[in-house]
Length: 63
Image 1 (tube, rainbow, N blue to C red):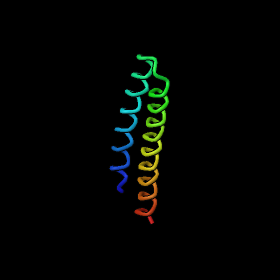
Image 2: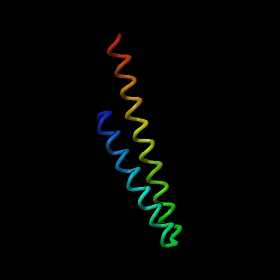
Image 3: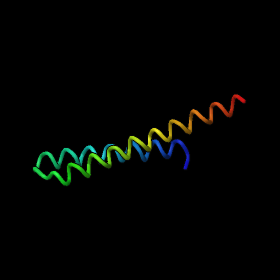
Image 4: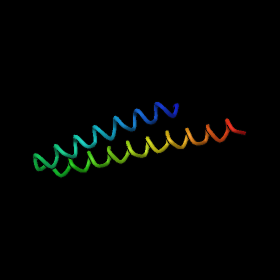
């Protein structure tokens, strides 16, 4: 997967997770709230992977 793809998927998972988390809080569903938090965390990790790939590519390009 490219760094851009990782970052886009990460942002999408973060957004979906935040929505689930908010919905879980709003309706009093702790299970949905936890699932949202987990998905949001997954998105943050995916974005971080994309950023690391960018950094590695920059170092390789300079070499």
